[in-house]
Image (cartoon, rainbow, N blue to C red):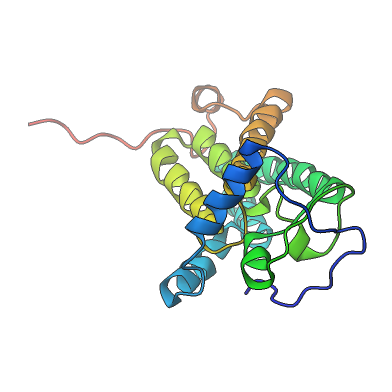
Length: 220
């Protein structure tokens, strides 16, 4: 549940959008979140918590642990890559949230107060930019897709669902989720550049368990 009666940071003063892009972003966010209190949207919001840092940390650590215990090098490498990409995305998005503040759409709709500017704040309702759910979901989805290209489509669809839910639930404006998704994509690419995930062909040559594809059924 998003906060309804937040403590307003002392440096958060009411402000109008400073340009057409920001004005369009605010207008779109408020329009898309107009059904935020509908039971269906609330259920969607709860479901989108699979994109929270707690859920994705558990998924990444669990994947790494499972792969390690099962001696499945490909799965363990995937878990490690997911964890590293998620951590980097989290560090970047947290740094930005501490640098700038922006009112979440639900606060604007419920209290009629919009603020954005410098510096950042640790008060959740004024941490709209960027979207942490979007950043981490994109990072982990890209990491999973890189390790297992065969699950690329469901991974991306799941991440897109989490990202879209943040707008309709009134947690973020469209620019917030786009920025968050970009952070996640870039973070995953950076991690792969620094510590590349072993490719299936490399694991196969080394005889690592879990590297081989499942045999395809013979055609009739």
